[in-house]
Length: 130
Image (cartoon, rainbow, N blue to C red; front, top):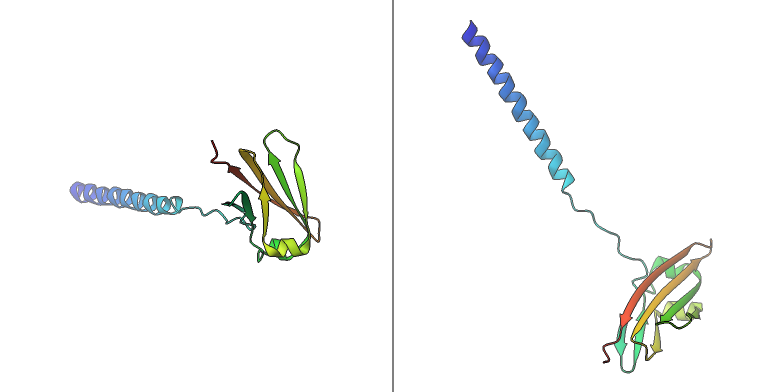
């Protein structure tokens, strides 16, 4: 009787340990699920083109198609920020060409929708000139 009780007790302990290990391994797999970051809706990008830069964004983005107004803020080194108003035609064209001799430029696209909500996206451009 004592041997049978010991065996039943041992089986219960073993079953409990296996259940605990299985539960931990299944919850670990859910913890290791990769988190995806949303793609920026404006997709602002700067590309060298000749002596200047093409500043591009996604004109089919819902943010752009529902825009009331837009601005491109340009920071060139220590200079005062330059703000270019983007009318509906420029916004839907999806690009602006800009010339500068600065070594470091930052572009920030600001889009305002009809409710007044502002969507912003920035990109840094560094000159490869010596």
